[in-house]
Length: 264
Image 1 (cartoon, one colour):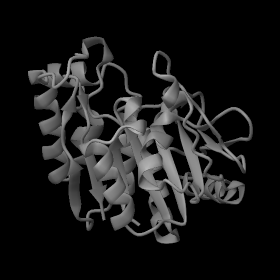
Image 2 (cartoon, one colour):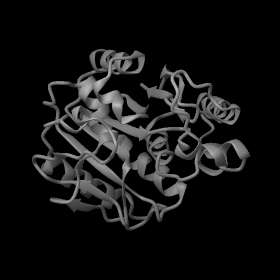
Image 3 (cartoon, rainbow, N blue to C red):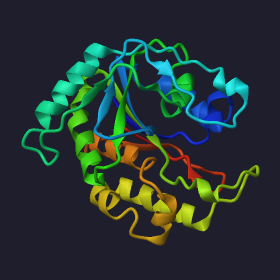
Image 4 (cartoon, rainbow, N blue to C red):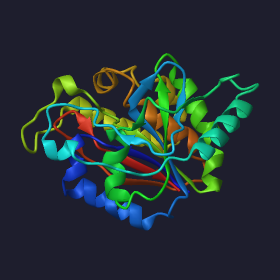
């Protein structure tokens, strides 16, 4: 299976038809159909690392101030407790002796489900909601290296029919957002988005792990790490032999990069 990083942007994309959602629809048709989807969403931030373990994950509307039509959206994809347990065992075993040694993934039976970082994408990619979906949380107490290395351990799932999706945004600064239609991107947003593209193409993962906020443009683009870390999971799960495709490139509302990356 390929690995995807998808910039999910405005939750309204879930109910809109635009170039971005058209791309998602085409992506769902053109890549191999997964047996299971594992999504690392920017919107599940936890202490420790958790996997959804319920057979029927709920659709979480983790936002406010949007039209009722968006709150009415349900994405009733099944979960897969058996696969969550297998992933838990895999990561626990793989982490022994590694730099994220003795990591223990926790299983969540009740608290979470599928947040909009996951379902706002999948509602276009797989509208029938028949493919099982598991979410993996972000432990924000851990450094960037941890998230990248965990992505490396997840890479083996690609041979098992699992589509790994990191869902966030390379540039995500809500304080500086411009709500007007067709807002001009900030210069710093363009600069950082292009810097990331260049580093991905050069397979310079070390710079993306260590230097992302070393520049002013990086600091403005990543005021908090939650929307950035899903990219590190996708980078970790990718391989040097993968082809790299940028399926979508845009900056919405001046300060939200919608760049989408596919490794296959």
